[in-house]
Length: 308
Ligand SMILES: NC(=O)c1ccc[n+]([C@@H]2O[C@H](COP(=O)([O-])OP(=O)(O)OC[C@H]3O[C@@H](n4cnc5c(N)ncnc54)[C@H](O)[C@@H]3O)[C@@H](O)[C@H]2O)c1
Image (cartoon, rainbow, N blue to C red; front, top):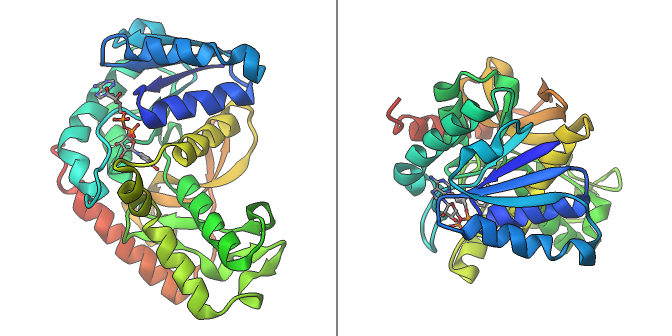
């Protein structure tokens, strides 16, 4: 199992670290355009192998895609992150060019690769990869919902005064401050609906805090977060690499599912060795359907900015 991570920045390095620590991949190649940067990150990470007890071989490459040849999975984190006060959508001008070039280089050397898109605006970048690579739709996956759901569970655990491991919940929709749809109705604490424990008002606050989860951290850190994004990506990589058949909300190309068409947006999917093996259509109530539709309109508006 060979995994390439493009972008050795905050998210790329965190993702490579979690993949290594989980010890399921034989090889991780980190690639960056900045001279020696990926090599340095790879060496630093390899020096944790004896400390953290993993056998994954991590190497770095300065923009040499021959080193990525034969990758089973590639993660695209290259591009600029947002600064405080910016929306993810504002990154499109620079990141679209980077994502297009990177995905085409990846496929040249790994025609059977499954691509996980992380760069923002993520739903639109995932759509761009569809439009420009011709890879089958099951092998193009956008990561956003797994992170947003982890943030939702964090906020739920705070409100419930319960450990996050006792809480379950999912966020669907676009990966944006306004487009996320935290499914509060379906959230549970050890299979009991969370509404049994907290008021509707508190639950609405949890949903609002979840939606601005990334912006909150960007304001505190001066750049966007990396630990939870890296861990979320590693979860998707592991589900595919180990054929786990786990459900994650991922951005995927919809062709009529949820009444939506010709866009990538977050919905629950089953992840296994073939990438997205199934789109899971859950019954939404009218309010949730309306929110998802509005979210889709936002994503389509951003897609309209692409020069395809
Ligand atoms: N989808 C999500 O949930 C999510 C979460 C966090 C961050 N992000 C996004 O991920 C991206 C990376 O964030 P970060 O914090 O790691 O940024 P960063 O600036 O720390 O790292 C980005 C790296 O990409 C490299 N790069 C730029 N152009 C490249 C190219 N053409 N080829 C190879 N490498 C190139 C840069 O040199 C840099 O090292 C941003 O767009 C950010 O908004 C997405």
